[in-house]
Length: 510
Image (tube, rainbow, N blue to C red; front, side, top):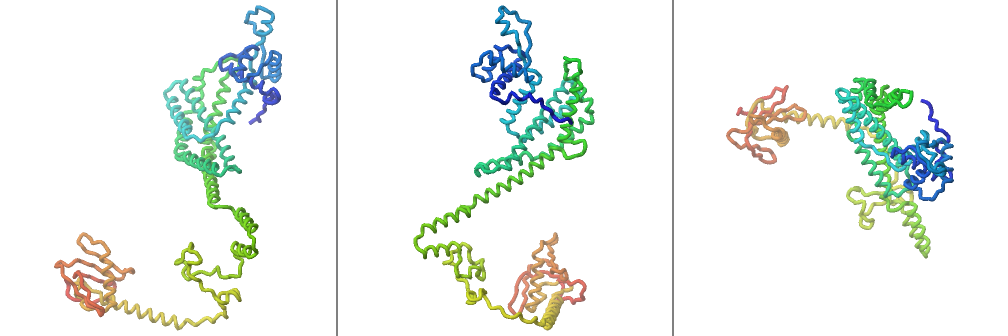
């Protein structure tokens, strides 16, 4: 792509002592062009100056000089008007010359107008523009299939205008967003409100943007399948371009349309498989949300402090200057910095959770302070490290006790193994330890829901012992005796089994 080269005299009218007059004159010509008046005499220029806001008096010599200077910069052209009838020589001199904007003058004034509009406007991320692009692509597909060439041209022009609006608004909003992220030295209250509103704005824009992007990309691909060359050719026929010069305007028009379509693809469906610009915009938005939230957190944390450390020290210095007595100064020093002889503030209560951290020192319980703290700086006297004891005997005793406990547990399970269904009352009299095991099994069974037959099942944690429990059909009451008392309850039908062991049947089957 060739670099953009601006004619050096194109924007000279915007600087200098007479810049205001030059801009107003070009503005007058621009207003006349909007009303299809392409040529103005000197009296017409003076009249138009008043309509665009130039209220200062200006004589013919100054106005002619300004027009001649604009003509020297190739912004204004002058022609002789031979179609008028002049009655006097003075009228001929005043009305013979007609001024009009050159092509470069039109471009220069349009550039100034665009620059001022950019300065006055603010960028935006509008999901409505994405929806409009998606809708125009759908309309374009419909018109390509069954519509007229003129409709294809109209819809394609609307699509390009929406894309241009998206590009312009996005560029401007991104610039404003980056300036906001770098903003310093502003009021924290206003800064907090602006950034909070920006975060909400970005979050709203990013909602469902993936779905919109996918829809647009799929419709672009559908248009590509129809044929871009055919689409542009039909749009060219619908544009009905005039041939005012010898060159065919269709060639440049088609080239411009192809560049616009490449821009649409770059935003949503790049040809080379690179990242679409809409995805880059989404990443910029998400990164900006994170950055703004971090800044808001820092602002919130700074607001939580009642005063800064600098303000605290300044206030302390002011107190030192107003205290009259030396003892008061020492007391203030000890209170502010705690550099006294006390060396126990690091000590805590045996159970700190029982003492609230907001309790005053005078109301909190006392903390024991070792007498050695003042003399040695330590709370206890540390002696020589003791020898490592021989724990072999302790390990052997623990292993023997564990073996005895396992044997007792095994014996208890053997006693409870019914070998079939029995009444709970069949257990009769039990040792207290065996009775506790039985209660544990009953509790596990009763804690489970019954099946369709009313049967409840349970097992120990390791699954070695299983119990099946059924309600007694006669509503009987069982009575079990233990060394610590008598247990009474429903006389359930119980079946306790220990898989893999030969056990005897206890009592009669129910």
